[in-house]
Length: 234
Image (cartoon, rainbow, N blue to C red; front, side):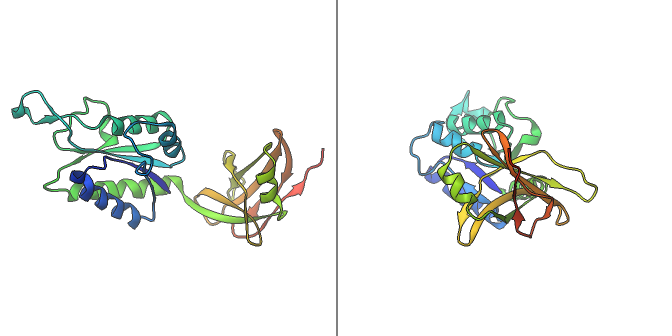
């Protein structure tokens, strides 16, 4: 699972970000950030990174005080809100990790936020850990399958009019929707990454389209076997 971690890069937040990264790593999550892209705006490069992720966690910490000091209300960082909203707008699982006092003005439903208190952070991290577990269950696992013909990965690299898709077939013969895959050339053949595996007993069907028309297809095959694609002709 790939998670985009939206946060500031201030020294004040460095410790919290480090704890979040440790928690995500403990769930075997691949962490994606905008740290190496510079700036604090929602650039096209950041948008692409978010869209390539399975989920987004937005760390909304205090920035500037709002109203009178006695109210204890704070704004948060606009680019973090923008990154969260971009993820939500693309249907990506997302949750806000909101520091005490930060005013999000009803922008996020309760199920999309976790209150975070720097003086007692454990409940927030436990809640986030449970959220990540649920995300993993919803998304399923990722498996790597070898497909033939072996030169398929080379053809995808060379030609721009081909698409590859796959779907799962359960023991009752029910099929999922088609999912996109990108065959990758590797030592000894071509590999595809099967995301969303929910059961070891599910089989997989793979199809390759050329100019939108099916050209290669496989029979339903167990996930751990090599998947043979046959030419459909035409």
